[in-house]
Amino acid sequence: MMFSAILLPGFFSGNFSFTERFTVKYAGAAIMYMVSKKLKKKYNITDERASLYEAAQTWTAALEGRDFLGGCKPNLADLAVFGVLRPIRYLSAGKDMVENTNISDWYQRMETAVGESVRITI
Image (tube, rainbow, N blue to C red; front, side, top):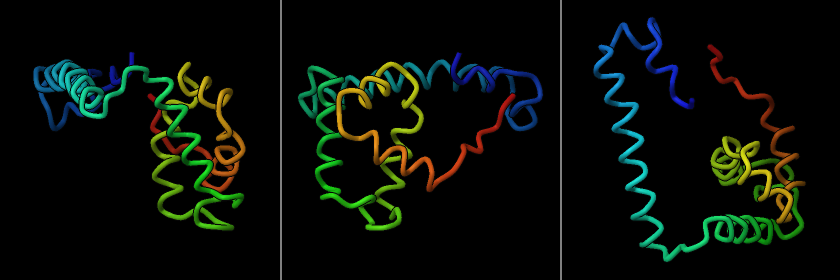
């Protein structure tokens, strides 16, 4: 039910009609599906999980023993990677990534440094 909030009355309805919100939700999903297939082909990705694990291992290797890529505190690169990983952390792919790579310690340090999510709850 991700992105269902866009269809709720009162949520974005001041700026967009129901039809526009409905179109954005479903057309956006279809377009992102096509984009993902094109990117997988471009980068020759046949196993998404293996590619995720490899990227996580590459990141932790780049830390070279430091707490963060920025040293003793996160820099913009740390925040960018954390921003990509945070939404998937508690999905099956994110759980598997933490269990099958060395990224867990860095991720925990980033959660502490960044703090709680400020997402809007409906």
